[in-house]
Image (tube, rainbow, N blue to C red; front, side, top):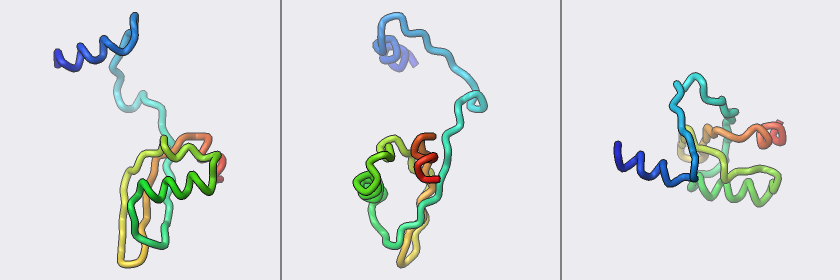
Length: 87
């Protein structure tokens, strides 16, 4: 734990960190993406970003990935701006 505290102290001068329960953290929107081919999830996000520059795909988090022989389904946690654009 001491090693972690040293790293946190290096964030910025005067930083004060507080721990909270998971229920107090802001909720991120979740989306399902169906891709008609199997490939690396990071490449999928790069392709989506190139086609849709308004989406902040670099901030998305992969929650789960399911594949079969011909396709994959990604569950992603996105930012609110990207969700509004997708809607």
